[in-house]
Image (cartoon, rainbow, N blue to C red; front, side, top):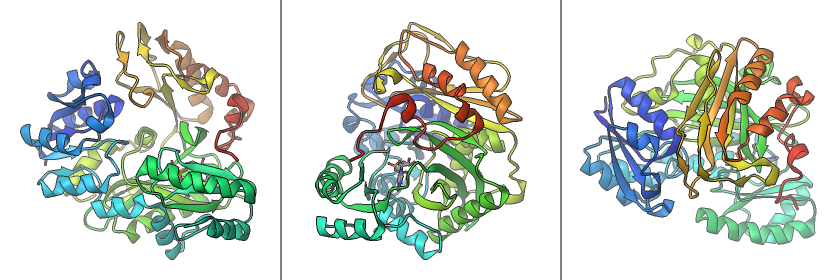
Length: 452
Ligand code: ADP
């Protein structure tokens, strides 16, 4: 097992990883940016080392600084968390070539699935349904028009290397497609360093359902059931729950089998997530694989009782998967709320600043993963998530009651947060009935941008 892990990340996930390491008896080094000097993970890690300026390019994305920090502090592994370098195959390769274990899948796994066109091809070949559309990069507007007319409008243009809900454009007509296509290519180049784009049928108001999987280096792969992540703003998740209300036992089994089959097709090792969309008719399609730990991994932990960060570390250390599929027993109903410092009344405008008063809910059925503390100044340079509130109970109905109680207790003064929006959602008849999809939030926020 590793003696020391360097954490190349920040915020709640850095803290989450430090906690898992402590319980495993592994020492931790936190690599932090100047803007995070006063952050909680810096205080709690065994040691912390500044790797550069606030701008992520100079710190959390600066590969040479991170590797130097690992070498100076004698770390034998690096955990990338999520975001930043977590899905950068070059970083995984550099780690390996420096004799430092990258806690995640192989660089090859990351590279293959990081190209969404490649991923679609692999899945299709294995008989897993993908959304109708292109299986090769779309190079010019003529090709784009051909595909769009073959599959029918509306269509969505997506960046092959895209992520984080960015770089997608929905088009309803030839004229819109032509103008959106050129912009999509150049935006993809700027945002992801790769101008390759593809086109899919745009499903109207689908549900986003994903399957957590875990694999070892010996070809064993298990599934850890689903997460329903349809409550989104700008294609980014805000509320996640498990089990999904729209999967019966047969559909659940089918989706889990797809996920394992897809992961086996690329000899996947470590934890990962296969994402699917369900259309109005209940048909399921693969959209992409995330080759890292996800923000919402916590609801799977609560469902299965498995610590996914510890599992990641053990699998990266070369351990055999010691959990048998039949021993994974989902229990209860779990809902996660991402607490973001942003104003839901004002187009989710980030609301960084100092937290003058913080009160976190506690009591039966709630888990809070946060790096926030009273007096903490949220830096403006990074993602606005300041924590996650996860509630659990035997039934969805009682989990919702716990959530309502906890949101009433939750105080993050004087910042604007997503809490008031969640209070409204929890009394929304359709949410309560489980009758929602990825279009649900537009009734609170107005239509999404990027819909042409
Ligand atoms: P990213 O990697 O940027 O998160 P995804 O491919 O995972 O992108 O898609 C994110 C979200 O965008 C989905 O959960 C869904 O809400 C929406 N989306 C993506 N593809 C489609 C599609 N073909 N039709 C409808 N919505 C889509």
